[in-house]
Length: 600
Image (cartoon, rainbow, N blue to C red; front, side, top):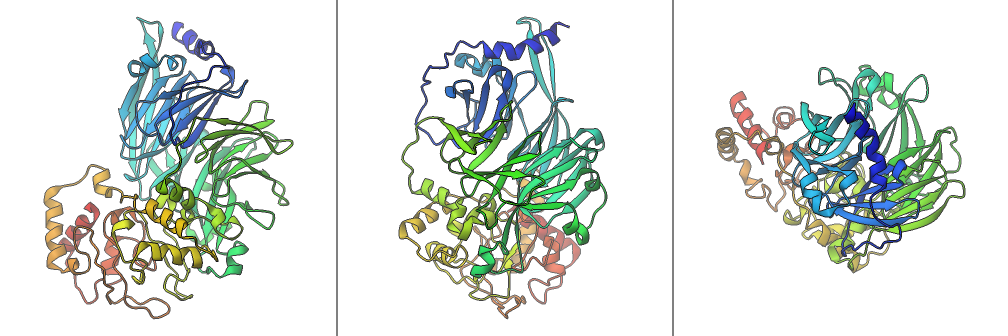
């Protein structure tokens, strides 16, 4: 009884923290990168989670002022949540930690460490979803391809007479894809999990911790999942892009969205639970465009929904939010908000929304009736951007493409790959679409492109800006900035390393097979590539038969292989595609070789 009383009292205590709305907090000069907003309407507080500093900002929504900035105990945050009882949860992707802070006492900076509670989670936690009704936390860990479930319980602290949090792991599931956005379907004890890079959506049974159904959508870069329970048939909404593998980067196909589309999609939650195959996936659900002749829609992301059927969507690549009437396919109003809007939350009266802008380090409140920015709240001073910071901004900027359809990030998700095919003159011809290569670690793996035609990274960037982004003029400072940023991108850990499953003896057996089979002639350690191009028995649709070997570092973090995506597993590379040509494998050697590759 007493514990429940304290839980109900907690939001009120949070509102009574002795900070004046007019107080100017002391904050350092930093790039903050806000990625998530959480609104506590009872205390007029907007919590802002910063990805680049690991800090949490507190905004008074009644005055529109920044109250303070607090450390979360880590140097980065990938996601954050506010629980119903006033706890703050945040993910640290660098330390692979789930951290919990007490919102009511976070203002007392001296007590942050003592109030901090943390647990280790699977490698690279990227997204978090909270089931408030059942006090369950779902964490999607990208590079370990792991979904982990946690319970959040509150017991009574007899000394301080306040609720005491306890976080316990309740389950873990390894997936065949890197998990990203999630949505709870409590009524069916289901968690929908979307691919971080591609178009897979899996329905995970929370009772058995097994995948009940899985659907492969013609989509990539799923930016958000939202479950609408307002009708008799619950609907799953998602934002995504769709890279058309048979379209080219010819100007008309780009300008009219044939090559890359920006969409919202609505799917029946019940139908998603039914076994579905790829052949009928394209007819499943209803698609609404976010980029069209009325304006740009590059890199659609998170959404907020009003009770009368309006969706407010972050268009992260074009610095806008869109107001989408769900039942109306006509004109889509868009409002400029700041550089790379990442999250949006609806005000309690539904007359406005708050938008977090990643590169601007601002929160913009947008009036939904007059479609204008009411006020801009700065999260603090920024230093002057250096060359790397300028390159990062360019990488995520969809206005570099005609009509704002796509950015570099649209194909190279967070620097990696969306796994799709694209016909973009990378081989100086149309007609042979090739897999989008990962850029993680690209600074050390010259030459570039599948044919190895570009000796320098800067030359490849110029070619991409001209032939893929269709820029007529390519300023030298833009090329230098992009190159500086790309050279900072490191390859991710191998899947085995990320899961803590490396067995040294097995790795060594595989290394022996790798070297005795002369794989190292083309894939030489330590980068596991070489500068030349080789004929290994593969021919593309226009007759190219010599390819530069991509680095095998982090090859286990890919879901399809070879230039045409014709192998869906590493074993298929050798058995189905006969790579290298005329090589017969015995089962034991092949198992050891594949294990070695998955260790890189």
